[in-house]
Image (cartoon, rainbow, N blue to C red; front, side, top):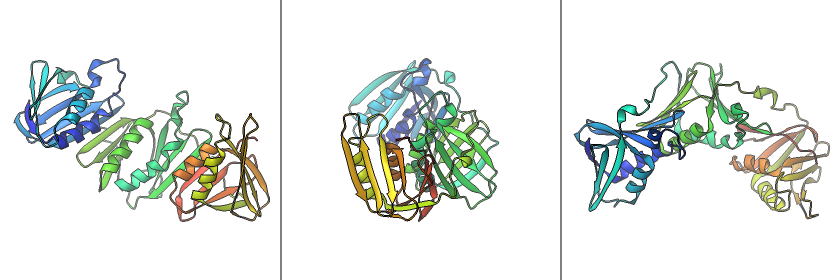
Length: 366
């Protein structure tokens, strides 16, 4: 392999792929990325056997070929090279020579034939969606994914297409639930799949870089995203997602509206003296508004009144303040609406001007 290409395009492609590579690995070749030069293109592939990424960069190809090289070392080198100079890559016997301006590097390589292939599942439900919209959907729900590996089915995001052609993303960690739905406006097969956390994060990164629509393929064992010249694949979590519809409360008699930014600021101040592990916050809803308070074992306290539109029976309810702030941080509306029943029932939070995003939070005993 002997090619020359711009430092900027090489850096961008390597950066996309190297984030897939695991820092800790038991198989040496998985620390590498695959470089494959053919015609006028350099194709770069990375995989950890669960998630895979393929990216392309335009190049002047003198000799086609393929080789694998350390993802971390190649990225660190390209990052430090002169942005104004093109980069030349030439493979030899068990090494890759890198030249740019007056810089010369030589990295050891492993055989490309030993690199795991990036398989693509063909029988998948295809969806075309705006990259910006998919990124927004992930941003609004990803925070509620669980980190508890003993319940693997909660560590990812449910991607669901229903018979009404709605795409729905749902996450839950057992204490809270985040849901965002969007109308597809196209014919798509119904499907459900749980996408692992790592893949969800990488999908959002690709969407943030793309200004057009992306193609999303939801299969039985794999999800695939095509964004421009980039392709991301991921195995799915083989489990059944909880029946989330049963968790979403309906018909709660108490309705409160508050200014989102002010609510978040009061919570942030109150949590300074809240229990550092449980982050418990006390909310008292009444005709006069919302009273927010917190305390800890050292007898420290915080109390603050917040204007709120509430006209139901008085309710005093406790929550993990961090869960409330996560939901508020995922919303962009000026005001938020809370539907509640009593001190033991979950609360439903949403913005009236953006009802496509909804959040359910379980209360705490206070």
